[in-house]
Amino acid sequence: MVQMIENWSDVHGEIKSLSPSPSDPASCLATVKVNGSDRVASFPNLLEKKVGDEITVQVPHAAVERAALAAGSRVRLRVRQGGLDRFFAHPDQVQKLGSE
Image (cartoon, rainbow, N blue to C red; front, side, top):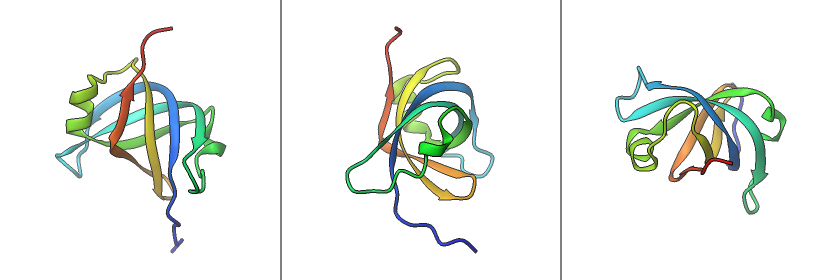
C-alpha cells in the first residue's frame, strides 16, 4: 500500500466527459484534460506531472450544478490525489472558466 501525503493542486483544463459516479451518488466523475497545474500554498503539487494527460476527478454533484459544468467546459479545480489513479475536487474550489 502506498501512503499518500496531504496534497492539493489547482488544475486548469477542459472537461472531456461528465457522468454520475457509480460508487457515490453525491458525486460525478469528470474526465479532465489537464492543461496546467499550480501549487497550492505549502502543499506538494502531485499533479504537475499530469499536465497533458487526462485524469478522472470525483467532483461533488452540488459543485457541478453550482458551476454549471458540462463536457467541453473549461475549468479550474482544486484537486488532491488520494491514490494512484484517484483524484478528488475540493467542493468549494470548482470554477467554470469563460471562453477565450
